[in-house]
Every structure is written in C-alpha cells, then in structure tokens.
Image 1 (cartoon, rainbow, N blue to C red):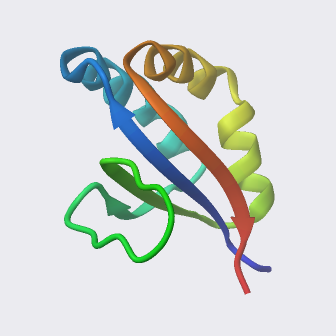
Image 2 (spheres, rainbow, N blue to C red):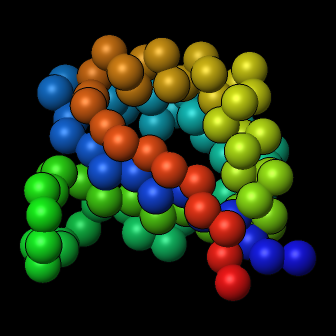
Length: 95
C-alpha cells in the first residue's frame, strides 16, 4: 500500500497561538501514524512563491492522511492553526 503525505506551506502570523496548534494536533498525528519528515527548517526557493515554513508528514496510507485531516481531533487543531497562520495544504499519494 502506498503511503500518504501531507505537504503544507505555512506563514505564521501569531507564534504564541501557533504553539497551541502544535499541542492540539499531536493526538491526531499520533492516532493516524504521522511521521514528520520536514518541519520548518532551511529551504531554498527554486521557483514560484514561497512561505516561511514547509512541512512534510508521512502517513501509512493516503486514507490515513485524509482521515487524520478530517478527524474531530485534527479539526480542533485546524481551527487554531487558521487563527494563527496562513497555509496551503495538500495530501498526495506516494509511489
């Protein structure tokens, strides 16, 4: 079974509130087997627009990645993130 990946590009507007998001999201990530491959860190723009923070999260499957996002646990965290940051997020299936 192919793995699933969240790709998120984020600009944080309120760093203190974003910390609340990180705490609130943890139960969903643990429940759905999330494995962080990139969480911020240095990057180099090659093409197009960029955001300050880039996140890559691996899940056991595409289904697990989508279920995590749609879970009640994560939706609580998502509401906090949306207050504190601007983001684009996609889920992709691995090969």
